Length: 394
Image (cartoon, rainbow, N blue to C red):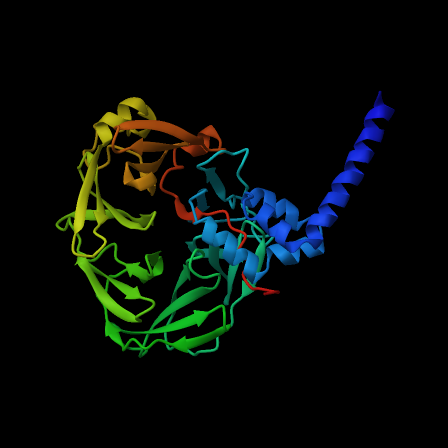
């Protein structure tokens, strides 16, 4: 029986290899077959031969594939805020079918001294020491960025990548114009197409002293900065202009617990000490105002997930619930929003429309560590992508 199986397997393998060679040498046929394939399948194709790797990394194929497959959130990367060699594990939360999804792979064996800075539609920006890299965790490719300008102060970087529009990415570098200046800034732009930095046409501009430039959010052609200020700013990349965002919808004593985007929409989520709910807002497309979307009652949520209730006696009204907002996910055509939150040892999703919740992930950490698990991670989107960080062929 085993010999028959081996013989059939050999025949099948030979036939498959011949078919693969035929497809590999017929780029039209290869293109039609592969452009409809999943990222997971394409990555396995890339490993089959050098010819296939070059083809699937070509500017022509990647541009066509990305145009047909707009970026979609695959999962979340949870990076410990306080990292040591003992506790350096980056947690990955898959938001789709695990059997059909890929697991992100990082380009450095030791990630202890690597700081993730930004994620954008499949690419990530990181630094290791004084060196900055763009890498794709789907295909484990990285590129060292040139730094050929001399800033007088630390630079805040934002990664910009819109694969359905262009296969090339940009880096927005923002720095103070004078070392002793507290509020005047200048923008530099790096283009992966030219591999060069250039000063932006935008003039120097002032900014509130407490604006958070470390967490720029790219959405709809602009990079946005806000969080702890009354009114945020955004940089229109095509026009190269700095603009004001509308005032935050909640001001006095409220804190912005989350600022991010999903499916081309900006979201912010507010709460305050002693408040038993979150309030979610969505930015209007014309930037005229923030629209109220929903309220998440934490006391009702705690009935389904008792772990999120604090066990302090007497109960402190300022610290009643252990939960941390990781992301906001916008459903197809905006028919619902899901708030993804971490609680001790678990990650849950709350559906704003149906007012239902579900557990989507259980931490690998021990029971002893779970009690402090929530709120100790920085969160980065993971989007499956075949986009190389630099093109070898056209």
